[in-house]
Amino acid sequence: MIFIPYVLRSHAILQRDVSTTFWGMAAAQSRVTLTYEQHHLETTAGTNGYFQFELAPHAAGDPVTFEVTSGTERAVSRDVLFGDVWLLAGQSNMQLWLQRLAARYPHEVDRAKDANIHFFMVPQRYDFKQADDDLAAGEWQTAVGKNIEMLSGIGYFYAQLQRRETHVPIGLISTAIGGTPVRSWVSQPTLAAIGELPLDFEKLADQQFLDDYVADNNRYQQSYEKLCAQSDQGVLGHWQRVETDDTQWTKLALDGETWPEDYRQPGVIWIRKHLQTPAAMVGQPAEFRLGTFVDADETYLNGQKIGETGYQYPPRNYRVDRLPAELTLTIRLHVFNAPGGPRFGKQHVLIGEQQTVDLDAQGAWLVKRGCWLPPKRESVFPQYQPVGLFNGMIYPLRRLNLKGILWYQGESDAARPTNYGRVFVHLIQEWRRLFRNPALPFLYVQLPNCAIEPNHVWSKVRLAQKAGLALDHTAMVVALGLGEDNDLHPLNKAGVAQQLFDADQMLAQYPNGYSNGPLATAAALDNHQIRLQFETFGHQLVASPGKFELCQNGQLITLPDFQVIGNTVAVRLPEGLNVVPGSQIRYAYANAPVTFLRNDADQPASPFVLEVENHFYQESILTNL
Image (cartoon, rainbow, N blue to C red; front, side, top):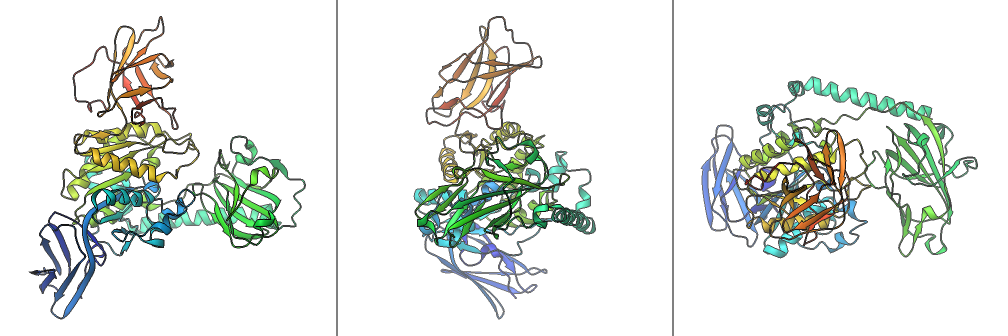
């Protein structure tokens, strides 16, 4: 039986204008023939059955059919195109699919008609024992109609932009997995060489240990859920029913900023609202958009469940086919760890075909605690451990040629950002070696603004991400302003894609590292002021009112008096303040910072923390990143 790898099967897109490897498996030491267009190639499979052909560079053009024969066996890959192939990598914000973005882009699925955009979703797989030789599943799809519902929004919008620019087919290979730390995507030898491999990593290669690790977690989660169900007075009393007496429930606004502390603690909180359906909406389909909650929910309409979500980040968008005249909406909210409750700044609305109802304007919400519970342990996800996803999802792709890599990751490292920059740089270098291209473009997103995780230090990850610019052919998108302070998953993925595309267009001009926003490169004393030096990549530096911060002697001193002079900023020191050795000046150092430095293209400056020197050094602009 001839085996053609899944990434080379029908509808594949292969990188144009470079030599291409076409490989597979056949009977051991059998003669294997590959024919396509006017080409006829032959080779002999190895003792393990592996065969490989090297194809001459091929321009973009019409679909190609590849036929592989060996003896009486035959396998065919049809509708294969040559174009530009981009790898989508990172975690949930790169993974976030168009169906999840429907509130922002409601017509995108209907408009998807470009059959020259294809995509391949690499199946999620981790392996701690070895790097997998090939993928075990997967198929290429055209980005047309409902096919795109589960496709990365960033990837799709980026492909559209590249299509308009290049007019060649675009292939997207998606590997992004939600929640994954950076070390999940790096090999064991690389992490070991830089001292970033956990001391007990070898345990993960023991299948019995791994099975026990997962089973113990499953037992705990099940026992916690059982305790919850047995303790919850709302479950025992069926509080989801319309006839439940809620006249003594507490009246509250469903606002995360004013939510009482008692209701933020672990346990179950029941939330209800009664309202009349507007006459024009009765009997019509509609969608409840309830924002996000910490942590999980089951939501009922007139006693019938209309949706549930198992963790805090997804929006609670629940559709109903026919609205009754009278509505009782009930939310059973699980708080696993404090602080729980509704997310601040979110709307709670009912959206019909012709009308929208603001649920918060329909009187107070009714709230009652169902039970108190101890804090819940975090769930165990083996794919979050180091190395596993590199072995299972990246290494098997190594024979492919790529046009470039798009990376959006870092949120899951914000709780433990130590050495992120070093690991990130080695990841870029390792992937380039793997794909045999030391100049492979690597475009990445610096974390945007987000204020929902006060115990995570997003600012440290942003600073560490700048380390990638020390490598040639890298580009960083400063994404402050593209995020949403109250959501881990901002919806403006077309904006992110546009910035990545613009950065790609600038790489030829700035091959030694490019940022779409100004980069501070040095800070030095100059006549009782701190002079900040910037690389602006051909743009002018502009500013609005704001405050820098000086960190010295354990104090944080605000510095609001400054002036832009060319590509520098002169920050005036208050009378009587002397800067001592080791002092640092910083800008936009917060999870959701205020940005007041930009360039004339309205791109924000990247956050920075710089030690204040006695004078400027004449160094590479990237030395201090």
